[in-house]
Length: 348
Image 1 (cartoon, rainbow, N blue to C red):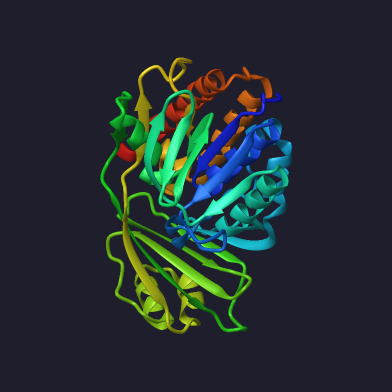
Image 2 (cartoon, rainbow, N blue to C red):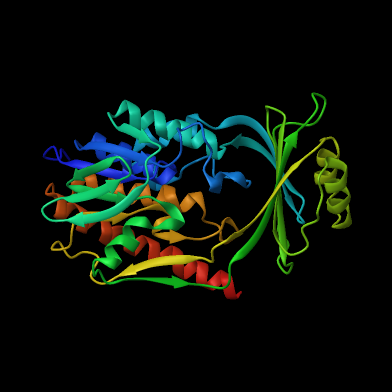
């Protein structure tokens, strides 16, 4: 579908924002993507923990946006070794890191004509015939506004303050995480991804040993040790019977340790998402539905949302408010399915 040359502001240059910007630009919109980071090389806070992403973005995205899906698949590194514990299931295959996914999506958005402005934070939102977003150095106007600000949900909060009927549903409690990162010596194993996720335990552990000899270990839940070196972390892993993880961790030297609390699974709800009389905005990524990887979604949810957006852009109405209404309705239905599954898993 060729859009009638509308302008679009995408707030957030994470995977969801980059993918949405690329798809809108390919459909004919003039898109600017804004992000508070200093540039694409600065990692987002969410990127500090281990991500084990699906190396294949899945049939829905391959069908709806084959070029975007091909860019993501092409960014996956070959010949990684996967080990899932406690089952001991091992396999070899491609590995898609979060930074590789972001790099591929940034390149796709740039090729589609998206312009970027980093180092800007939205301050206020107004709407008449267009959106006006105020920043520290001025304001931007656009026909379409996309909220890809993750857990911040900046646009949703701003619209709520303007009287929109929005709410957040939550499941369970916030999750506690701890991530260690450090360098591995040249002789240490590389291209390994390991996951320990016993069904009845209060913790799960993720490890990746990258080709660039960087080690990342994320511990979700209770019992995270105060380790500051590879051998200290290896000792804690050994106490859980995780010898394969401990062997790799033991080779590392000093480790940086970051502890943080992630919000509980959340779903943004609204009255009449398909109402074309509402302003032309939609929410995508974690700003819409936020579920942790242990529920089987994580970044896979973003790929599904991008597939829905691409489907609407391929055959939806061109006028911005009608387009946004169609996108909101499709994404709301998709997010509800993810949410219902997350609810089942959270009480299982």
